[in-house]
Image 1: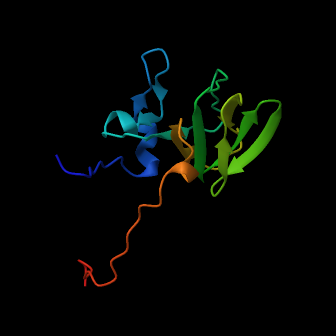
Image 2: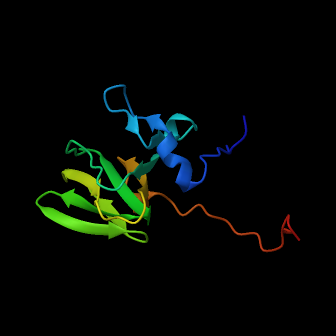
Length: 143
């Protein structure tokens, strides 16, 4: 096995074609749990698409997981504890542990609401060593 994997998740316009979840009870149209298809060690990710007017029918929170929502298309709203936040392409929302969250694609959205949800937890990233290494002498493969 190599130290990397490649998975084609398709163009965002096709994300609605997927049906998935973390269990049968939490599966829905427009969700692909990418970390179930790749060998992810420290992060998780889902690719999501909601039709205009569609909303999640539950609230949820995590005790140990932090989530980052990266919105790529459409218009929507997130419920975060007792507040409503408008989201659209280019909006990034970090949701910490213990925060109740829910979301929807507003009915007048010009397109599907499409987003990536990136999950991580248990270890704070600033506590990881900076183990990056640069090699400016190594030739680029595309030159």
